[in-house]
Length: 238
Ligand code: ADP
Ligand code: MG
Image 1 (tube, rainbow, N blue to C red):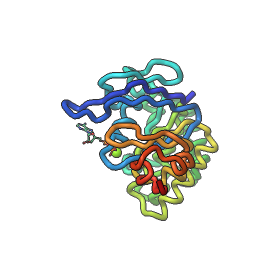
Image 2: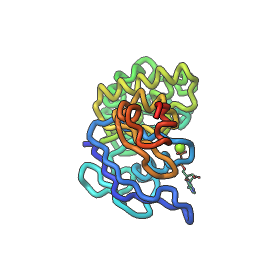
Image 3: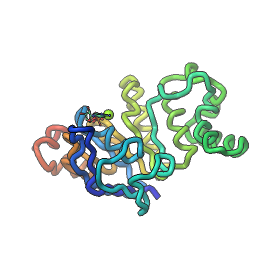
Image 4: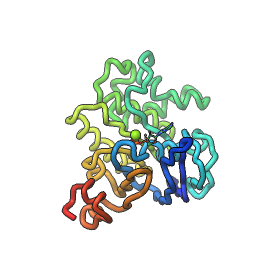
């Protein structure tokens, strides 16, 4: 579960060749960070994996099955959006249960899964509040809870902490890292923040202009940057 293979994945928006062609292997249980400057194609690549955007050519396999043209819901992946994507008029409980309700799950089964996710995320005492009555960190945890209940093969995060203040970002980074240790589910995490990449990743994918500059562990990138771009971006002394 949670193995994702990209083969010659290409994406163009009209004339604009945003991703000229990427080969990438993501292994089961890995915490993979896509990092690179704004506009380099991180979100587009994540959306291609999620199926929210069609690829122009190439192949996507999830757990050995061809998923290139599969609908998002068929891919078994869960995208975690920023906390402002919560429904303000619904309780925390209903926000977390929403994907299960959409999938037609019984109320009893929904309750069990929501309460389990709430326990993992320390939200048990907040289930009957509305998002507006929560702190920024709690709201972000609700957004993660909505992904957890689906028991995805992989979690996909797109800059989930970018609208939180610096101190809270540090806490949430630790919480997401801890969640990964507990669930051991594949996570793909997009950020433009090198510190986030270096502190959270098992494997970092450095992107520039839709191309993979280097793939490696934080230590490998720091010690052996493939080129000046990676060295400059990661901040190591090559
Ligand atoms: P990042 O997430 O790394 O900041 P994006 O993936 O959002 O980068 O964007 C990469 C490039 O693709 C940018 O030049 C952006 O303008 C372009 N792009 C993204 N989405 C679209 C779209 N729907 N139509 C046209 N161009 C797009
Ligand atoms: Mg982006």
